[in-house]
Length: 203
Image (cartoon, rainbow, N blue to C red):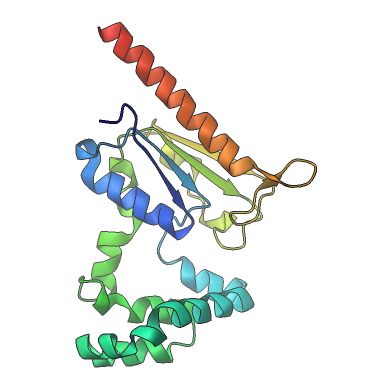
């Protein structure tokens, strides 16, 4: 049995992290979390299409190459109409909306209710570190929620940095260290130490 359990979510994975922690609240065994270069809202895709079309186009083709083309027969056998829509999508936002029938939620609005992390974050019970660079081309600065939103959720620590891009956060003279990883470990070590002290006091 582990004395301390932590989770980290990176980029789109941060959405899964927050959704899980919010949906399971006190039931989760996780004691601390790091939400790194996060996806706050699941409607981010339209903004990426409009603001960074070349990046969005590359992401669309990467996802389609990795997940759709090799699984075409299986997708068509499950829902041929949705499979065609996924294959023909010309933007990230169209692709995300088209994929909803494969999620078990029926349609896009149902998927948003279950999977949008902003629907769940206020139910998160564990200390959670959020890191976002203001020059991030994917987790856009415009998408960072107002700090007032966190005023009633004291277990969140939001760190905004001027630079860092998306996931990169290279640090040191040769860029061989990761500012993102160093700060995450600092946060988790602190939570673990405080938790251990509280356990000692209770004993």
